[in-house]
Length: 134
Image (cartoon, rainbow, N blue to C red):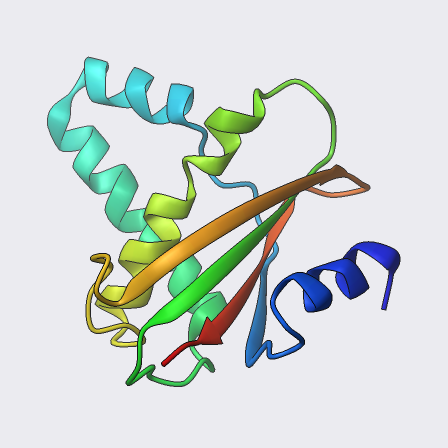
């Protein structure tokens, strides 16, 4: 485990229950806004397609019966996209978790909080750490 992974374990109290890697470039907020401005039906289709793609990665996660805290570790190939725009994609991930029946809801009752970290690497992806809390 790398240094950031150990720091994350310490940050979460060492109780990470599940980790999933979504090995794809998710749309940024700017990407989504541009599609929304062009055609609302196209933006709806885009969101549905992205959530379907995310579903392929999250399929083996369990169904969470308790609230969760989620950490998103965003890895970008380069510095072209603003980090706040990149982190917007958590909306697609949370919605996919609900649609796939992994979370009951993405309201504050079921998702008690989330954090984001960023790094630059060889490929663009996000690693999601999910911790069930009481």
